[in-house]
Length: 333
Image: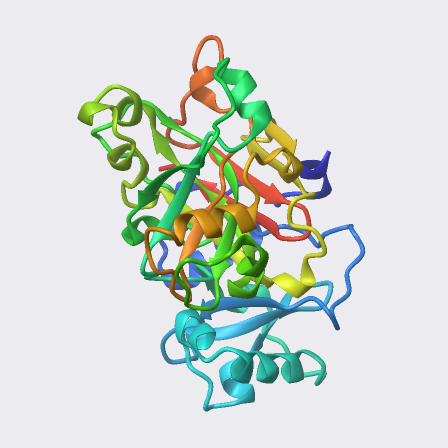
């Protein structure tokens, strides 16, 4: 299965986490995945990232490049490029063409150990989430497959990076995992037709829809928002993989591991409503903007429906992985 394609480095002591930024960068690098084993085509695959490094001022835009997934500093390649992903996406083809040139220019790369990966998108206008959007997840709960998309939201403040920690809030005792395919909007639109929807997509990434089940299912009038949007409850990354680099986003292996054990394993082919339908549906109600994030639902295997239920605890490590997109690794603290 897809999760077995990665081999993690050894675990580290709590003291290492307290040694400051340099140790944090080292830990981040060592927790990151080994290279993917599926065929790589670095000249074609565009994997946009946001990152920071001690020797560079502020956040930067980059490209993951080559089999070792080093990082090309796009802002060093062209100083006129914006330094945030949303500004980059807002400029459309003009900035994408610069990134394509950088990808084929055989530029030097920064080692993964030299950088800290940020979420591929920060501070989006909205994070749109879809519930009950996998056929096998509906069967897991013994509920009917929805006839229309079930839409809720997370606040943008819940977004963290691909290797950042997930913080257990003291207000919840039932924090759960959910691996999800995330779609990132690249072009503004309203009342978008399904046939035109992919023209509004910038690309795809991996998401972890962390969920406080007690707040989602019993408290706050059983509305889902509060249970979904605690700080750190939306790890994203590692890269925005542009849509032209993903031949079929609805036929990708998707899985989640908790402490090395596979807990979710399915395919995005199980999605009830595909990307085009979701964009058409949601854009009836709201204008979509570059950088908006869609979390498209999770497959079966979440903790709350296990017998007995299983929830995340301090010290756990969650790995969310999607074929062609990569893996995110989050420690629970």
